[in-house]
Length: 196
Ligand SMILES: Nc1ncnc2c1ncn2[C@@H]1O[C@H](COP(=O)(O)OP(=O)(O)O)[C@@H](O)[C@H]1O
Ligand SMILES: [Mg+2]
Image (cartoon, rainbow, N blue to C red; front, side):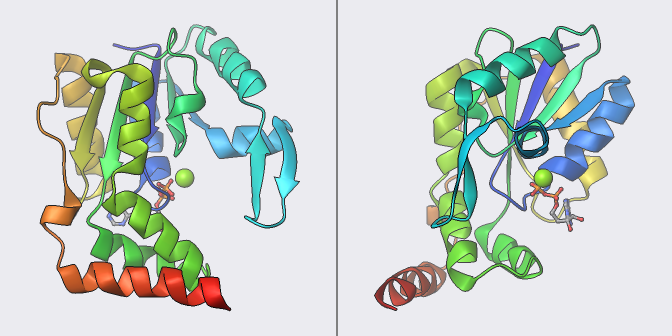
């Protein structure tokens, strides 16, 4: 059905959980891009300020291409799908989650309020989706709303959309759904911490 399927989305939306189920269902490999980057040292340096690795895009892209040509279907989970080589990617499925629910879920990770707010804002503004579309083209990107659904249900919808070659015509816009007060609260957290 595919050689290399990308499950993308903001941290916390459920990529790893869903990718694991899909890989199991299709008898393929599940690949977590962040784990690969750290595990194989595919980064340029660690940025103390952001607390994250600055990845070596060329090496990551090459390594994923290699893994994907190993004969087994590969399900790649990542929040930066745009670093992958467009030639080998069959489909990018972007998992979405209502930002209010995402906020609560990220609080269990022990992250700072600022880091949580940055990620929730990224979901609010569809950052991962936009990056995926600009790299792979709108025809190769679909999304699945995971809000209120189990990883098994989500995995089922992903596989259905991929097998049918579904093309997405209308994408989620959380800004038109979420309470404006929530957005103000997010902005407050983001500006507060900048001053300290
Ligand atoms: N559909 C879901 N419903 C409820 N909780 C979920 C769902 N998917 C994932 N989770 C939980 O949310 C957390 C983040 O999931 P994970 O798969 O690690 O997300 P990601 O890989 O996108 O960061 C985990 O604790 C996981 O058990
Ligand atoms: Mg993950």
